[in-house]
Image 1 (cartoon, rainbow, N blue to C red):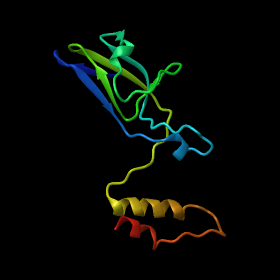
Image 2: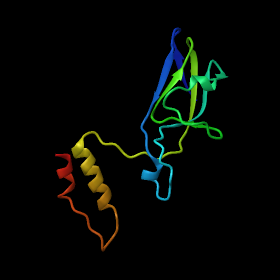
Image 3: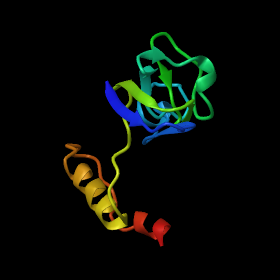
Image 4: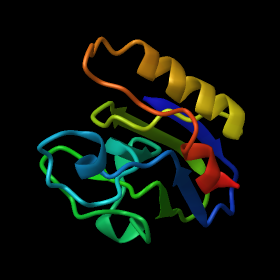
Length: 130
């Protein structure tokens, strides 16, 4: 679990993360929700938080976990030790800083594909960015 010491007077904590839509990143998946991280435990001073603490940015509880949408609010009354446990259940798109590194990473990935009859063009995608 990851621990965070919250100062007294804390009213809200936000869990911000990358997010992805499983149907866009995994073949055959029909889940079109935007998912951030899968939270398997969220406790304040050792006690599970009540459902009322889960504000905007949370999906409905599932067996053993609850998904965020990438920007989830948790209502806190006071301070204490916040413990969070996540499950690595989702693939996220890779991010590169800026357009040129992203393009270079995409082309490098394409170069690793062994597809003798296939081809792709390097001269058209950049036009959409300009």
